[in-house]
Image 1 (cartoon, helix red, strand yellow):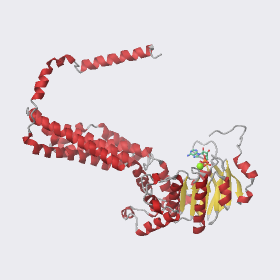
Image 2 (cartoon, protein in one colour; image 1 turned 30 degrees about the vertical axis):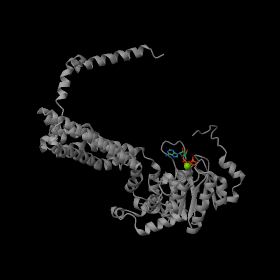
Image 3 (spheres, chains in turn red, blue; image 1 turned 90 degrees about the vertical axis):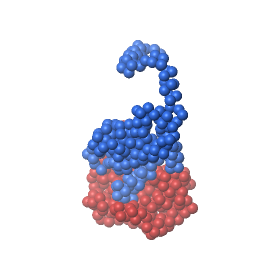
Image 4 (cartoon, helix red, strand yellow; image 1 turned 60 degrees about the vertical axis):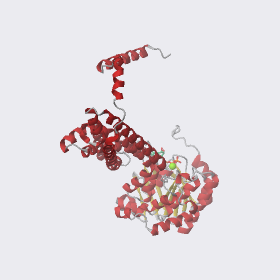
Length: 255
Length: 251
Ligand SMILES: Nc1ncnc2c1ncn2[C@@H]1O[C@H](COP(=O)(O)OP(=O)(O)OP(=O)(O)O)[C@@H](O)[C@H]1O
Ligand SMILES: [Mg+2]
């Protein structure tokens, strides 16, 4: 179970909070899509969940334990239970699909001894399995820069899955993909979500995708939650409210 | 309109600089009146004297060994240091500043100066020359590689962090594959430079083909000098070819 308790983030030099007073409880098995305009704080929120971003106020709890109280070592252990996929895939160039997927096991390595042990058979077997799950077996030895965008994102998903995660985080995982491929990636995510009983939390810009796959939609605006509910409750009214440009104190905010 | 008073001043200053530089360096083309002497001199270089070829070859190997070992030690220590001298991977600010300072210090001492000191302290021979090359190259490669590290894509690093990887692990695995081809380019360039440096270090007693060239020259054995020079040219070309071969294979 993941809890956000009054989480706020103010970036150094930021005139207002990028995330302000977010309180949410997310349960295993939920498929949550986070909607919001550019700059509304979606990425910031996702990054707070696995501790890549430290909240200025409030706290994030994983299984009841606040991340802020954890040592670096404990935080690593939390992170390896949370897979993360990225808009720009963030794969390691010049390495093969297989090698990239195997880097997903690095959370389980702590010292030089492990490094010298390189990858054991069990890890290789797991990697093979997840590569098969994302349907890339025929390309396992291909270098990742020679893949299409959709294939790259499938490698990203495989890398996250090999962690045996309980949570799957996605920061706009389909924003650089075409609609057909986006749909394919989402159905893959849903399939994995069901099979492994994950908690999936994904930022999207495509409301259609969110309504089709999510079990819960959270909409952010200027760092605040303005909607939290079932996809069918997210109607045109909420849609407009989420995406209409906001005029604050009469001045428009330029980014 | 490019013709402005400001430009005129620039040209004037440039002319002055050129004039004084020529005065200081006794730049005088009329010295070529005795050009015939030069041709006579060069004529003494031929035919080449191949009788000392085996010694020359073993000296050349010594030179290549010096250059390779020196630049490799430079890479071996420069690579890890570059990571603590790059702002995005350095453990702490003080370490960052300290390592950058150390690298520029090493870089600022020319190999020849360091060679002179070490050759005096440790005695003549290739070993001090290797150290001189290594020391300088730690500074140069450390700096160049730290710039590559700083310019590397932060995405993969973030991904490694999200995976729960240890920091140094993340750096090693997400940055090294990205920068590796460029590291090799720099390394091979430095190897080439090290070959030339080891020749100069040979002149001051560092051994190798450089020392032989110097000795042959001073003892007027010009027919051996010509072969020394030829061998040196061949070495430089081979290293250059090898470098581009390896680079092409890696990229
Ligand atoms: N590293 C940073 N330093 C300073 N300000 C930042 C930083 N990252 C984000 N911000 C600011 O925080 C706010 C929220 O940014 P965030 O990236 O979370 O938005 P987002 O909803 O993910 O937007 P997008 O859809 O464009 O990715 C924005 O106003 C942004 O300018
Ligand atoms: Mg974002």
